[in-house]
Figure 1 (cartoon, helix red, strand yellow):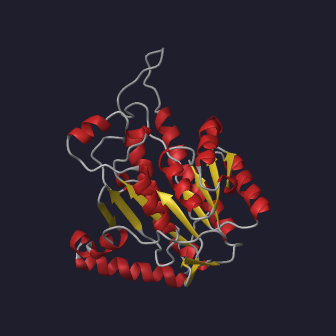
Figure 2 (figure 1 turned 90 degrees about the horizontal axis):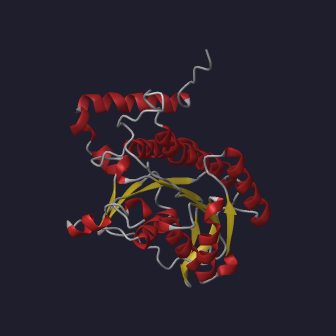
Figure 3 (figure 1 turned 60 degrees about the horizontal axis):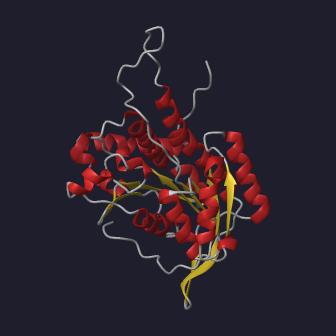
Length: 312
């Protein structure tokens, strides 16, 4: 895929969407776009962001169609409670955007020492992995569970063009989930994990006709990039706006033809990466290994997936 997707005029008035990390940045832009299309939107974010969430809601075209529910996505009990509350209050859930994420505050692999002169464990890295990977896994598992019970919705992209909007989950990866040159050890590792969630969840999602995709934004003007934004722009490099990334997120989330995709967004460049990766697999590992891996994949499909070993 190159260029942008084309669901700009979709009508989402009968749908319910949940956006994690929705109080600020890309998440807030996604909330705004979904709300403008008529969706009821649940903003899930830390309790400390309540003021930002309320300000966002007051700015929406349809503020009555948005609600803030606080939760730490790395806390299973808190997030499970939010999903249960959504099901009770709205009776359905159509789209889940697993947007929440963070980055380390200091270099992970540099030596730091405690008061006894001992090398410190990388607690800040644990925090990043908890939010970005564990939190995304929590969101994915809960979303799959609740989306199963939601029937598909007939809506329209125009007055005369009815269509079915299938249920979907959109993970927020990053170009750091595919490449790295910035040295953000915890962030890059966690986002590679999110790409792993995308790939490993496809067979389970397909059983329930649920689409799972991932968006991989490059440099985007948010709090996470504030430390280098001026120098990045001065270097003449492509910059994403949160609104541009949000457009791709919503387009992919609401397009029933998109499933299993990983979409890179880098300014004017929009590319689908998962199919491209498979297209060059033979050149990467060799045609003989590609053929072998293909047969191995058919084997696992035939036996119904990997047979887990159980505890020792």
